[in-house]
Length: 146
Ligand SMILES: [Zn+2]
Image (cartoon, rainbow, N blue to C red; front, side, top):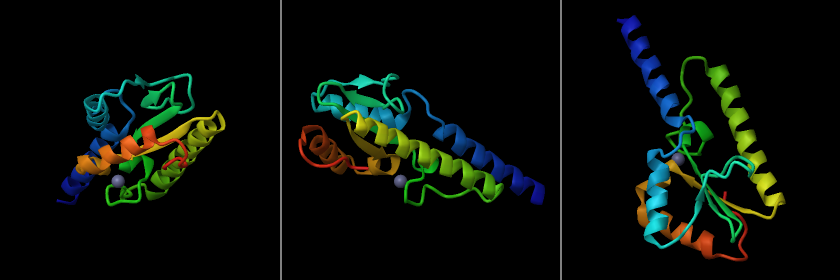
């Protein structure tokens, strides 16, 4: 019995990892792209020449959007649970991810870019995230929203 539950737990963790590994054209990104296209915005994808390869980029406006999975990028929400097995390993791994994210955002800002992070869980309220996106894209003076 114990063996079985361990197996289940491992496979849950594995599927969480698979989902959170940075992939192109994943669900959350497609939702954000659809929102932006629907609003008539034109954008570029995955600019590798910019720190952190932002998911969506408005070149002329110098604005970059990252669509972050809550688990992998450690959002302050229930989706960002820590796996019960190998806790220390995961804590270190997550710490590295968070540091790398912050480092990329800082580098972008130093280059004069503004950065907006869409968290996966925010996509449950499409109206709200659409308004936030428009405010970020159209906004001129406000600071980066992270
Ligand atoms: Zn979240």
